[in-house]
Image 1: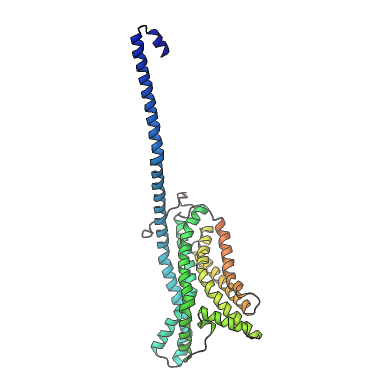
Image 2: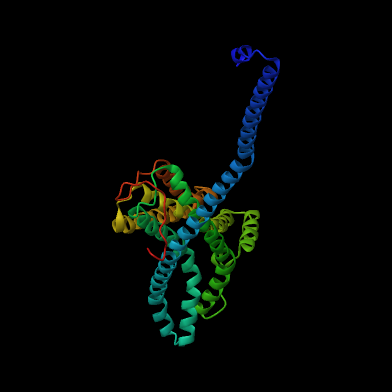
Length: 337
């Protein structure tokens, strides 16, 4: 540009050429600045909006997946709970109905006994139903290739299930601490035909604590044993409620670790877990009654052991893939499943 300016001999032409060059340079500068400004505004305004939309879309998808996942658990849980409860109530009926018949009890009395046996049966069947329903649904998810292959995928599926199990555990705790003592009191009265003496099974949590404190203040080994029995009953009611969450995590961990187990794993694993859990619970209660172990340790030992096994299995879940080889974490519509 300088060489071209030197080639012009007339001053007027040189002035016009210089002004034109300056104008062109100014336009280029303004154009570059404008593009830079637009790019900056896009980064400042548009990018956060896109990021927000992506984040909101991800949250919405996560909420949809959570609803679908919990929806898929609802029916197996209800069916399993109803089946197990009916089986155990029927087993109780085989023991009590003949005795009531010998006493000449009416059909209304027999029906009342069966209804009163439902609450303490639910205290046992609710944790079992939680475990079996989680195993069933996660087995289906494994066959559909929806479990993913990383611990992040596992957590995304397990956390809503454990959260729902926490709600069930809270309701079970209310059942164990408030409803069950009253129904047990009435059941004992109907079976005996008269008002029976209060026992640890017919007391509320407050009554159990008062009874334990009173027994501890009394002299003698028998009073100490009674206090231990009351403490065991208190801890057992809380431990059985918390078992819902532990069994939910255990069921998901077992199926994720052994995804090809199918019905064999569901039946065999369920039997093994239930037998081991309740054996540990009964053994702990026996040790606590003999004052060999503290009541709190004895009643929570089964939960602690099962939780340790569940966490060990969950730490390194087996790699699951769908038939197409995809590792994507997707959940089908429960209505179509």
